[in-house]
Image (cartoon, rainbow, N blue to C red; front, side, top):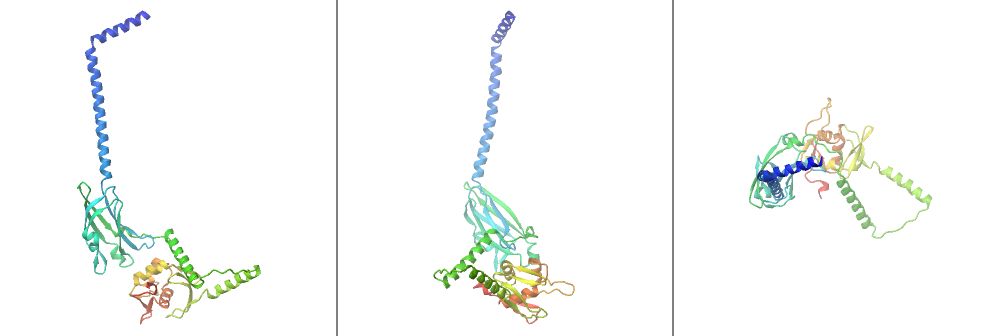
Length: 343
């Protein structure tokens, strides 16, 4: 058996010696094929590296509209470079133009009018665009086409087109205030209280009570709070009987409506005052068919606060606190151009 294996090996060696050129050609072909494969892989790797380097130096301008966190009816326009590279010589074309306010259009805003020489990565420009509390039905149909043209550091031209469609905002609602704004409001109240305390009491004093005195003091404080609980009194208004409420427009208030209490926040009052500033509006009491006039105070309260009729309460409160005046017709009130809280 050993002799047979040895003979086979010798035969293989003899065959190899006789075909060395063929084997050399075969292995050369294998090495060449491997070289081609590696060359292709290297080319792909270089190509991907170039693409990554291009992306890292490529600007990308984004233009969107976004409702504010604290007031969802106020719409901001945000222009931002979300690319990794800076944009140069940025120009904007707006069609059709949009009225920001009386006698001022979107195209007249500085960076839209004159462009931007340099727009850094992650840099953003934010401006107040409009309020949907006014002319809602008309504004929700608005569409604006904005074209942004710019170059990168190598001089390559870019052009991006954005459609600003207000109908995307339709039906959006917010629940409560963002925590950061609640914290800000709370800090403002603390600061105000500390300021009042400092003005009235420049030095701290310590008052000691016995347990019985402390309990009696609590009882007196509760009685005092109950006494002034319904301090704000609104007299008879048209067919509305006198009523009382807690709080104020500036701080928010609570109104007793039938057997329930309705709370209206200072933020809701702020939106209301912004919408109706300087206007004479129908209070918006429901008629015999429970229909509330459009564009009235009652319609706004129905859509933004509660479904139950509130205008008969809120209208007199606005007049009482100096934000509006009675009209010649008791069904109307005129909002002032300057509010007590403006100063």
